[in-house]
Image (cartoon, rainbow, N blue to C red):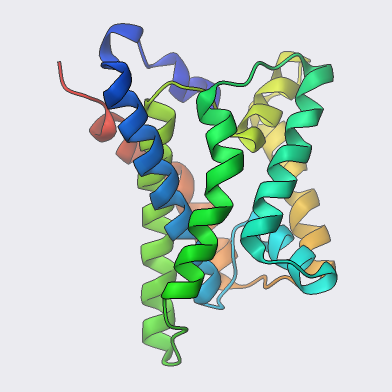
Length: 206
């Protein structure tokens, strides 16, 4: 999916570097907010965030810290896959967890089910919009996206690579105590269509 999206972005439409950096960092901040809201909903996170949450529960440290550490470790897997990081890749590793932790610290944990659903849906929509922003900036994929595209270069389809990776991290995260629930299903079903919806709308005009 990521490779197909990137193929639709031509360099003349990416905009100036300051504009691209603005979209990159706005996208990472919004992505972190989406992660934080979805986790605070306690209705189930995305597969990767179930994994990060499970590591936090089982081994200590904050969820955001594990997002950073896992992102850095995933980048090491880029070496045999001959993937090249960009400033967006490094920024994703360093900042995504910081933004997620900040939102989880600032946002009150909701008690009513309706409020938890509001957190969940806002989080998933924010993640879709954020993906459109930071991918549209064209400054390098996130470490987890790069892992999928790296496996694709070795002959595995993007769909197969994504399924294997996300099922694996989801299973490990669940075994470690991460929250798997209706939110996990909502994310899985909605993130693709939301990203497809937001990508052309997040592109600079002209």
